[in-house]
Image (cartoon, rainbow, N blue to C red; front, side, top):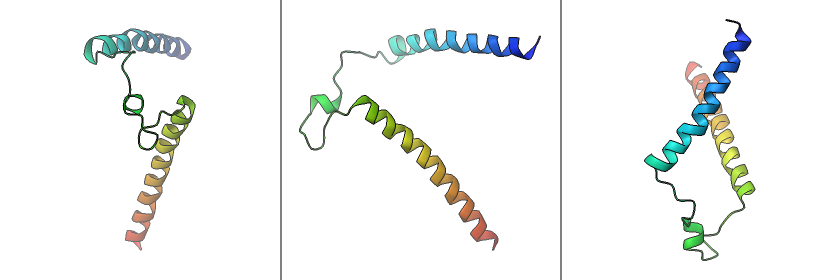
Length: 85
């Protein structure tokens, strides 16, 4: 079996799993309700609870993950270098 066939089958399997298993998790396990109000909307006070734009929120989430990984790796490298000296 060629590598490209294995890759294509793997992508197909991932797509099928994403499509059906995620629906199963959302419906049966977590019982997600698309009409449920988030705390930002439910307790909206303009100070602590403020709804965010979805694109701004996604950007903040992404940068938090990336910066945490970079900072954690940098701290690990500098810590190991200071102990070796």
